[in-house]
Image (cartoon, rainbow, N blue to C red):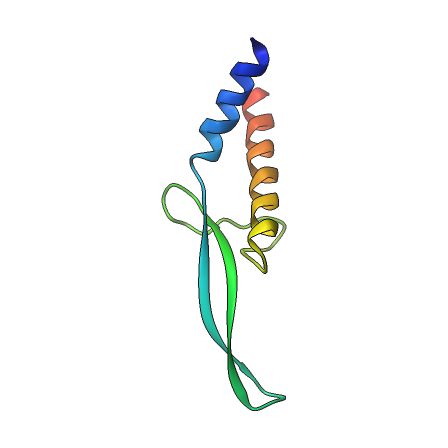
Length: 81
């Protein structure tokens, strides 16, 4: 029963966040051209960018997912105290 409650709490916390894809142009000084890059960011329920370990943008969706799991776990532990 306790595991079910914990799962519900974790799910409730994670629903407050979303991972979004950002596409932007980056100028490469070495090759003198512009390239398109994709990054992923985590936003909270107020659509603010979330920083974790001094990072707001992640190279892969999987990296952003891992960071989001860490954030949710940290919030869960803070709530338990």
